[in-house]
Structure formats: structure tokens, C-alpha cells
Amino acid sequence: MMRPAAGPPGAGVRAAPPVLSVFDDAFLRDPYPVYRALREVGPVHWSEDFSKGAWLLTRHEDVERVLRDVRFSSQRTGGWVKRIEGVDLGRAGRDTESGLTRFQRLFARAMVFLDAPEHTRLRRVMAAGFHPTLIRDLAPQIEQMVADLLDGLDAASGFDFIESVARPLPSRVIALLLGIREPDEAQFFAWADDLAVFIGALQPSAAQLRAAQRSLLQLVSYFESLLKQGSGLLGDGLIRRLARAQSMGLIQADGELLAQCAMMLFAGHETTRNLLGNGLFTLLSHPGQWASVAAQAEQMPGALREVLRYDSPVQYTGRRVSASLSLHGHHLRRGDLVIALIGSANHDPTRYVDPERFDISRRQGSHLAFGSGPHVCIGAGLSLLEADITLRAVARRWPTLQLVEAAPVWNANPALRGLKHLRVRSSTQLSPVVDRRDVGVVCAESML
Ligand code: HEM
Image (tube, rainbow, N blue to C red; front, side, top):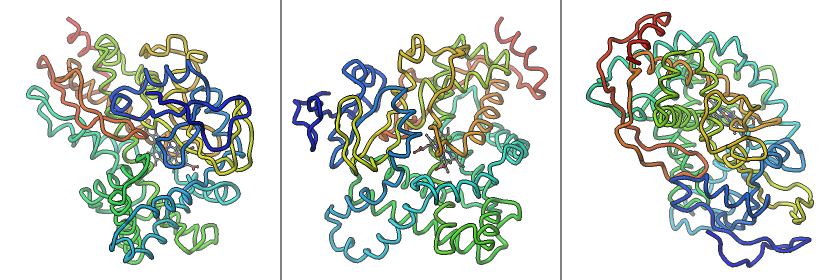
């Protein structure tokens, strides 16, 4: 993992920290031993996995502080896309320069990549569309979507939970939230996949950049035509709300609305899919705790909190240093990239007792899986609702569900941790529970 110290540009005020290569195949399989080793060496590391390098922060306290501190800017896409412009795009690269500029502009205008005051203005507008009452009102429709997906499955023969449930559900729910009448699911998957690969890549290749650019521009044209026709949109969806905000001057007319819509897809799709997948995998890997939530569904919120801490769908996020500063004796220069390792912070032993133990009854404060501070995840309530409805329904129907493979394959995305496939099957045939109030009875049977 560690290479000899060459030192980052701009020497540390104490000593140059070691240069590290962290995000290798072993990390993708299991990042937690890597984080432990890093934490044991120190709180701040320099990594050259990112082009031009980045500072890695490992401790809960530092990760939380950086996400809340305005000296660490969220405006980080400039260097990001420009850096890739240095990659030889060949003939296609020269032909698509204006596409690249538009792509960069759209990315840069998503509120996750903005600071105050633009961020504050957009967040206020968007927050209205994520009001807890509005989200709660989506529950019956999400329950129906989950039931439709589960009805088509044969648990006795086994099924792939990712392909059958965790992948389709979030895009259907985002379409519902946005108010798209008839979403093209296959197209949504393709766009979201290209954007997730680009965002998660440490040093995106020209091909990854081209795919993300094509997908983002197609996605934006799709939203433009929905807005133009109007008939494809539901009246109370987020797109219509944003259009109203734009007509009131709260959102600028030159692409701000489209950038927020596109952001929903890349911020909410892969993340929720991985919460569902990581959640079911972790619970089934701890059969006693799975049996416990299956028997007492009211334990699900606590179980989901622990899943988010134990195996976070977002392993890290980035910031840029806006004014040179010193951190734990290291000199961070203006413009340096800082990677806040959420996955490591959530396993910090100074914050959690026995952090490598999965324990749904853990009562130790909050996790950082949804971030912290002004950019804390706006979709947290929605993704928790989706996961709660889905995992309760799965546990109710198939309390004896088991993993088919003990070691399934993880995706190759170091930032967005999730499984490629999750094959499961029900070991005994029990009649599905139709009414939630029967849960206790069925689980008593399943425990015999
Ligand atoms: C388990 C699921 C999810 C996880 C783990 C997650 C994680 C996060 C994290 C860590 C951040 C902070 C990023 C930063 O500070 O740089 C964030 C922000 C955000 N998330 Fe989520 N997210 C999830 C689901 C969703 C969903 C379902 C949506 C929308 C439909 C969504 C929309 C957003 C948006 C718009 C932001 C930016 C907020 C801002 O800049 O003010 N997320 N999310």
C-alpha cells in the first residue's frame, strides 16, 4: 500500500507525509483494513492516486470539521474537468470541445459543487421539494413499486437482488419525485451508470469522460423536451416546482434548473442502490440480526443507521482548500484537493466502540454517511424511506432468506461502494405475510 515518501508539492511544516497509493483492488474488496492502517499512521496523508494528488483525512473529527468549514470549498469541478482535458481525446476530443464546455458548466452548477451564496439560494428552493411531509406522502406509491418488484421473484429458486430490486427501484422513485409521467428506465440506468463511473473514477479516462459527457448532455436534452412539451410532467413534481421557482427568479434561467435535475440522477441513484444492496448483504451476513429485524420490523431504522455507518454507500467526498492553512502539522495550499474519507470516519475507534463489529442495537451517535454541514444529503429521508419499505417487505416475505455466495463481487468504484450482484434465496418455504401486523406471527414460525 505505501510507497516511499516523495512528499507532496509544498513541504509539510513538520515533515513531508508519506506518498500513498490507497485505492487498489484490495481496497475495492474491503476498504476497512486500509482505513485502519491509515488511521494508525496518522490523521492526514498525501495520496497520488488522484492526478495532482490529494490530502486524505481519516478521522471522524476531521472529516466532520472539513465538511462544515467554509475554508474547504465545494467548488471542485473546474480542476477536475480541466485536468481531464489534458488527456488526449484524439479527433473526437477536438470535435466536441463545445460539448465539453457545456458539460463542465452543467456539472459546476449542480448545488453539490457550489458554495454560499449560490448554494444557499438553490438549497432553499430544493429543500421545499424534499419536505418531510412530501417525502412521507410518497410512501404508498413506493410500497406499491416494491410490491410489484417482489411479486415477480421466485425466492425458492433464488434471484439477484441488485438487478431485480436495488437497481430499478431508485430510478423509479427519482422519476416519481421529479414528476416524470413515463420514465424510460433503461435510459435512466445508462445515464446514471456513466455519471457514477465518471464521478467515482480517481483519474477518469478519456473514454469515461466522453461517456459522462454524452450522457449528461442527453439527459439535459431529455429534461428540456419534458419542460417544453409539459405533458410528460406531473404537476406537483420537483421539475415543475423548479420551473415555478425559475419563473419567480429564484433560479437562473441559463441551465441552473437542468443542472439540478441532472444532479438528482447522479446523486440519488447509485447511492440508494448501494444502501439497499449493502444493507441486505450485511444483514444476511449476520443471520442472527437478520432474524431479529425480521421478527421485529420496528428495529429496521436502527439497522439501517448501522448499515450506513458500517458500510457507507458513499466512501468519500472532496473539497478544495480555499485559503492555505495548516492541519495536524501539514501545510495545505490554496487549491489542494482534500478527500474526506467518510468510510474511515465511520470506523474511527475514538468515536465508536469496536467499530468493525456490526451491531443493529448500537446507540452511539450519528454517522457521516450522508455528510454533514451545509451540503448534508438532501435526499437522506427519501433513501431511508425506500430502504425501510424495501427491507421490511423482503424480511416479511422471506424471513429465511440467505446469501447464495458468501463473497459476492464489489463494483470498481472507490467512491460509491456497492455490489455488482447479490444472489439470495429463501431456504424454507413460508407463506408470505400480507399484513404487516402479522409479522410477529410469521417470524415466530420461522424461528422454529
Ligand atoms: C443512501 C443513499 C444516499 C447517500 C449515502 C447519500 C450521500 C450523500 C452525501 C455524503 C452527500 C454530501 C456530499 C458532500 O458534502 O460533498 C450528499 C449530498 C446530496 N445528496 Fe445524497 N445520498 C443518498 C441519497 C440521495 C438521494 C436519494 C438524493 C436525491 C434524490 C440525493 C441527493 C443529494 C443532493 C442533491 C446532495 C447535495 C446537497 C447539497 O449540496 O446541499 N442523495 N449525499
